Image (cartoon, rainbow, N blue to C red):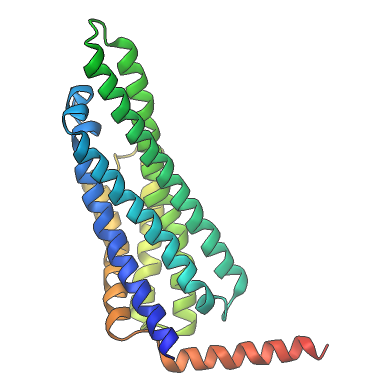
Length: 243
């Protein structure tokens, strides 16, 4: 049980790290992603942008860490869903990484623009538009679209197994549906991701991750539920071995 408590603490810390690093990283990107003078501001705030990229790398590591740490527990109930969760979480991390690379490439473009002192910045702006578009799409597909799928999978297993209180699982499934719907609305241009409605639809999933993180750090996973899952898995193995 000590290993399960340790796993719960690791997952809790990683969820907190993911939330904090995501917010900090997005704010640090502001000079290079927002405003018409991003090619100038980007190079002027190069270190800030790089720190933002490091924050997103922490987000990537945290996302992968939560999935791999929870896998042994989730697979005790349903190995297929647990494996899907790991695969889709890795895909989410890859998408975020692509967006991170696009921002660093935009920073290089900004530095080249500042060093060249060109009279006609048209080609630089054309390249900048493409790189910013890559970031915008990955920012939607990773932290919204894939996040919705991943949250729904682990919250469903938590609900069925009672590894955590069901109010947390229900909040997680609700938040997952909301953030997935938000991704579809953003994809079809109903409203921007950074908007009032985008924030409203993202609140439940953010609240779920924070509440879940605090619960796991303080209480851990339900011991009775873990014991029940262990017995169920042993019975399943015995059944198949006797066939």
